[in-house]
Image (cartoon, rainbow, N blue to C red; front, side, top):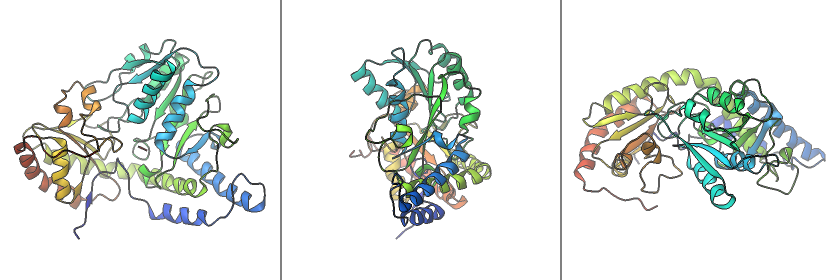
Length: 397
């Protein structure tokens, strides 16, 4: 069987051997971390060690880590929890264009069922949130949310400036750092700066499987000063913000993967950026192919390309047949043949929003992988452009 060239690390990254070993070791510890007997306290020690280690990577206090079932739940808890907080005021949610569907759909649900007013904030042509427009939208808002780095086009936002604007307006601010974590610096304390009251950066979402940890594990960093309403009730675990028996093995594996990702991050960023530039140079030598997003201030391994005259679905199918895995966008939406809302937010047409691929490199990507993609692209593009409509698909954490 021909080996698959995996270039969809933004969807999920291969499980690290060290994380697998940590999961197995922790899973062999019998006991509920909420039990007071010796077995329970042994599990508790493993859990709290993982919480402390993850906090060290994220730049927060251990008590501020709330483990979740993944990035999507973390986003839901961060946004909905701030909206429903007892002391929350106002009716507006500041929502930049181009956010992940975990945020978009959560806010849409709050608008439909609880009367939230959505205040959109535009992106610039490179996919960056306009800080001045963001700040101007904050007046008397109930909360604000934003991506640290766009999960599709890869552009990195100025989170510290966004957080400072939210702090000045005394508006609680949630950051979705799922796509950024492990690839660019993510530091809750540094981004938060000198906290004033309950405004500014108070919550931040991350996910384990994006950094080589297991799927089904994530975390929400919740400031000590923040007041959130829980989504899951039934116990006092994790400051009362998420009830239920905690996933000790998942937490242990997440902590190991996070430490390794952070230890490798700077060196990997240089390596992956060089591979990305090589890939982009090769791809854009094909007429009508264009890189979207910021050319440099982006997730190092992200190459988001527009192929004029070729449907992204057709290209994905053709490359998949050649043994190369890429994506048309977020994995949470990739099974649905819809134009990319992120590309539309860049001011592009609906047709252009159907002509994109997201190619994301990771720690297992080699020069040979990039060369194989470069070799396969010209024929795939020619064939996709020759197809009237291309094959249609059937169908975040």
